[in-house]
Structure formats: C-alpha cells, structure tokens
Length: 323
Image 1: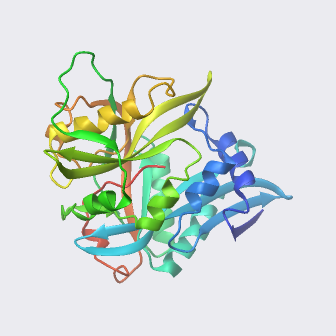
Image 2: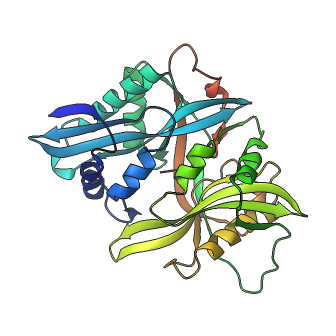
C-alpha cells in the first residue's frame, strides 16, 4: 500500500471515487468539482493524503484551509475532513495510517486544526483520539454541534430582523469582525476566502442581517447536494452564522432567508442548520429551529507547547461549518 501526501486539486477525481464508495447514502454528494473547491481555499498550504494499492485509489483524507479568530487573535488554520476508505480495502488499519500522515503535516505546520466527528460513532472518536496521541498532538473537545431543521410556517409573523443577499462583502466582513464572544473559536474568512466561497459549484449566498436600518449579522448559506437511495436531494443549508448580539428574531431571519434564497430549486421544504452551537440555545426554539437528532462532536487539535497564533485550547465552541 502506497500512502503519500498529494496535491488535493490534482487527485480530486480519485478522492471523489473513494468518498462516494466509502460512505453509504444519505451522504453529501462528493463530486470532484466540490472537492477542488473545498480543498482549494486560499490560505494555508494545501494538505491531503491519498492511499493507492497497485495504482488504484484506496483511501483519502484532506484538510481545507481556513482562518480562525479567538479572543481577538486571527490565524490561518485547517478544517480536517474527508477521511474515507473504500470497502474492499478495509480491515488493514488504513484509516489510522491516513490520520498519521496528515497529522504529521498538521504538526509541521503548527496551525490549529478543527475536526468534526459523528457523536454516536465511538469507534471513529477512538480512532481520532489515538491518532492525535500518536502524532504527539493534543486535542480539546468543544461543545457538540446538533443539527437543527426549520420549516417556514404559512401565516407566521415575519421577524423584525431581515436577512437578504449581501450586496457588499465589506458588510459581511464587518459583521464577522463584530462577533466577540470569547468562548467561541470563530470562522474568520478574509475577503479572498469569501470570494472563493462564492465559487462553490453548488448555489451559495452570503446574507446580510439587518434590523432597524443597521447591519446586525451575516450568514453563509448554500443548496446542499445529498446523495440518497432515490437520487440527489437539494437541501437549503445554513453553513455558518455570525450574530454579534443574537436574538431569536435574528436567527429566524437567517433561517427564513435561507429557505427563500433557494425557493424553486430545493427538493425538500426544510432548511438544515448543522452547527448553531455558538448561539444561545434559548433563541433556537422561538426562531423555529428544531433538533433533528444528528449531532457532531467538535475538536480542536494543537501542537505541543501551545499553538502558533493564539491560545486555541481555551475555546469552548466553534461556529465553523461542518463538511
């Protein structure tokens, strides 16, 4: 088995094949175009690992470049995802070997890395913990991210706040910069990353939240492609939400605007919001958000002796998107 670090953009077709075989439906539709976009964000150096057996792709893992902010300190970082092994190559310890190689790259970079793992999968969590330990890294568990659904109710009173597609990236960046909750490891994309985000091969919008004539928040939303046994379902999805002073009205405005943004394109009526963990829970039900039962645990992985750029291990929760 050959395991090597690769240019993720050059192996997107092979990675897509591995991911689509590794994960049964319902699951994100891992097209090569999606992977090129997700792993091609500007920022930290790209990092991915591909396993091949006799020239045939067997397993894959990658990290998507991101930027984080915690207690006023901003740094490049990574979002680790896409761990996958094709069924016929399982039982050989390949997942652990993929983790080992990618974590060697993470350790060399010195950058904070966020990982999401399905909360109900004890084997997946054990595998991650052992891989982090063997790599000489440390890991902090953050608050769990519980998926919420939202279905617009006919006749419901509109929220006082209004969310609509942003006309200016500066409004979105200003709303993001105004988020100062010191418990939160914030997603902190710069203008180049926001511009890249809008090149998503799936429909995507940046929303500006307004109330009483002033900007009070922002959100990134998109039309998720979910592979199911029946085919591809298109689901309106809240990717990340930024509310410096959250209220139920402002959360409701984002959820409603997400539904409206993809009206006529979505194949299901419900909005999916995988990560609202940075919002006060008392605002979610009044906003119309309901837990669906799907939950991911979030972890921040750090190099020994502290992390370059900030005390990331003190974070309690993140608003980063789950991929």
